[in-house]
Image (cartoon, rainbow, N blue to C red):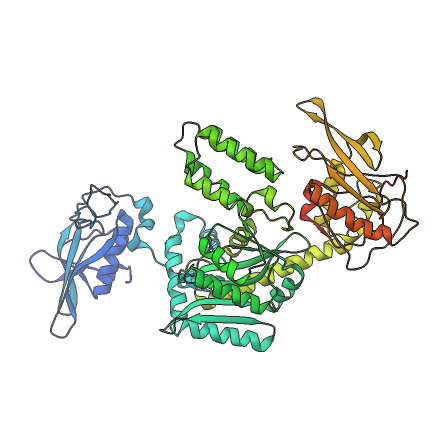
Length: 637
């Protein structure tokens, strides 16, 4: 409507002749017999009046003539009417804008003009012109804003970021004519209009195109009897290549991200040589049952040339566990420890001794490194707190080998104790994907996200190749790691070298074929100097030139370099395929590692010394480097 006064006429009382109003339209108040050229002008006038006054406007009633044209219209305040809830107020009460407000106008057509026939100016509620822009009927997206939102959405910009950009351009929220909710509704509507044709067909065309561009692109789709997509799996060439190097440990989780069709996002996540999370394939599932997981795992297995992972970390999903047992029977399955421990408040919050139960469970789970001591301690825990019949704890104990650290520490997990890798990946994808994303958009944005992560890995590779992290000691072993490891992993090794600086051999006792070493560690605690001591026995069997070592203090709660021998140096090259699985503070791990070192010793009769420097936390590292410097104390009778 033209806001100039020439389009608004005020009728003299008792006749149909109208004169041009002297006041500007912006100052006019609805009155009887006001005249407009069109119905739209009348609606715009009353809507503008509502914005100035602080209320919204909606159409209450309209009537049409025999030509199907509107001749009667009633416009009312948006708070007109009475709210009737379908839920009994005793159950729940909901907020409502309805307030039986009587304000409104009635207009009708006569001689191709529109006249105001009834006016009610009084409202049954307070008016606030300052917040008029928040009223639904007063909010409107302009063409410039729509174009900006469409372009940003195609580029994968998050909706809230697009909205903040427009707010900045407008000079603040007070100048906005719409809310973030309106932006989300608009984007959702645009996405639906772009996918009027079958979204599944668009997805298939995209996958076919990706296969044409690269033969290593893999995908599979499962449909129901109505030809609707129920499950999707795909992996690009980057993911398949990464799986050959880093696919021995996989984190799998489906909890945190869904698309428009409520299909769960199911990424296979690994860890690369920088300790970064990498994608090893991705799935979308309509159902999280055993058959769906079996289908997905079988797809992943075919994609990765039937190379099952050595280890997999998941939550406690029973359907997932069944599928892993069926498809990956030889894979070591580990439950997310964090998910289990966070359930403690839920399970025991009502107990009087809740604090003690929580504290004791954490001690037995995190501090015990011996399975025997854990089992004894667990029985004492149940007896102490009267929890012998607690079903949750009993079930956890039956499956203890899947989640208790002392049962899992001798297996390689690439640093994964929880599904946080998957959760972090979901958080990363949240910047590209949301609950309104269609299947086709999902895959496209997934590819954009992969490109982003690939670029970040290239940048970290460049940093590792073109910069050096200085050694913190004069140890040639540390320098070996410096040459072979990426910065991220070398810094982890350095932490272990720093931790051994306060350790030294206190006593050495020789008894026949046995040598006993006492290793002492001095540390500060609460400003006071304290000493921790652990015992190490070395068994010498000279006839077959084998040495074995084991730690006598397996329940040590402090960090110590468990095994450290140093007399002289020798240099020997290990075979390219030789690697050392770092052991823990157990006799089994110690024996395994020293037996591998003995292989190197036996190949060089002149060798007198080989050393082993292993730390408790280095179980998370698999040493694929050629150890040039190996030392071992060798004493003859």
